[in-house]
Amino acid sequence: MDVRTSLAAQSYAQTRSNAAPDASSRSTEETIGQMVGSFADTLAQGEQTARAAMTGSADPHALVQALASTQLAVETVTTVRDKVVEAYQEILRMPV
Image (cartoon, rainbow, N blue to C red; front, side, top):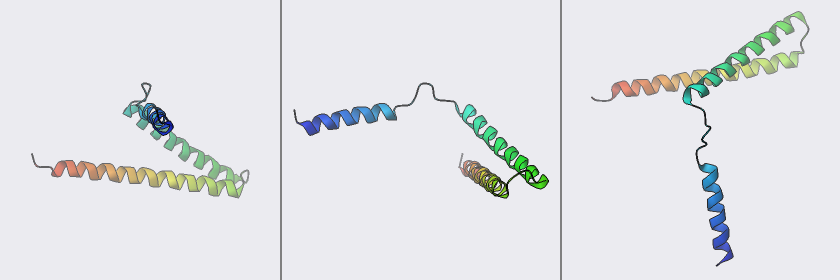
């Protein structure tokens, strides 16, 4: 047997097992719940850092970092919301 063929077969088997769905994968509800929780945590951490910066107990660099991560989280949620609304509108336009 050719060495290249054997290597290709081993690589294929490894790739196939890596691409197989995991039996312990989370449901959609759990994934969405985790994303919402992460979003809420990001907002809460940003607010907490902003309060600390107003009292002078936080570094201005930490405030800028917290505000940037909060802005990114809000933009991400807005983009996802827009895509969901767009998909819903496409479903409504489908002929029955």
